[in-house]
Image (cartoon, rainbow, N blue to C red; front, top):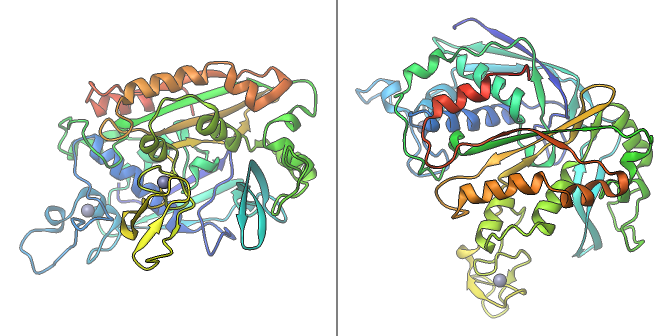
Length: 423
Ligand SMILES: [Zn+2]
Ligand SMILES: [Zn+2]
């Protein structure tokens, strides 16, 4: 497939690609390419190929003076997406869609407050007004003999089960790729062996995917009682305070709901992280749920400070009083669980997705048991009582996909994920 490829995406939840600062004034190709590369690496690793760790010392570099051809010097991901000395094999152009809201972000508060130099601030997650909705056209232009089939496979997989772009954990990036045909012939060029499930880097066999639906209640204001959204509607936390940047956002949220977008993700993540008795130790909790700032290597709590006696070399944890070398601090970690906003699929029904990457190697130690426990928590009552409050909404889990650690066949898992249904 050496032809230019045009793919039209329809957003179901807004797409966010990052940009300058916290804005997303337009769709930035780099954010989308980063996301596509991450998926491609995961697919390659799960299907018997090799994808290097682009952040490590062992990442690929192309040296034209060496006798080996590029495909021998580079891993599959670097060969397609580029690396030092080797250009990406395709160009991406992307149209802009429309911004979600005309002005200002909406904070969905977590309920926690943080002390900062500027005073008390409300913690939470933003609905970015400049995230993009509508129809988005991707133009993929192959350079030289590039094969773009993998990109189609990735978009088909994302379209059915996951989300696109860097902020999937916050609800963004559920898209529908129109008329996409995923031809899996490109898989034959990978080794084809089923490698062991021992990778600490993303391997798509370690991904799980769930999909939920619920009926919209008759009461028109049903969404206003949802935890987090209720506080954003009123512009007040439970204790009546209104720390910045929390603002009364009833009209804006109403506008979103009318557009078929309901920012449910923060509340679900809040429950999973803080209310659910998941039995993970603190290291595994940190790995699974992530943290936007560095944490203490002993108790995994944020808020660490320079040590007064040796502020250049040592840090101190106010939570457990541990003093440690600066370079032992555990850096900010991305959430492994992705939770989408809810999106309206017809007059009566809403849908959302929860998916993620939980590896068989590393944290948590009992990976399959953890996922089974997660599955049953998501089918229980307590989470939905917490999220929806008095509305008696219990979303139905329509789909659940995971591959237990004793299974290795990535091809079979991929075919299963791509078959059935139209989404
Ligand atoms: Zn590489
Ligand atoms: Zn500590």
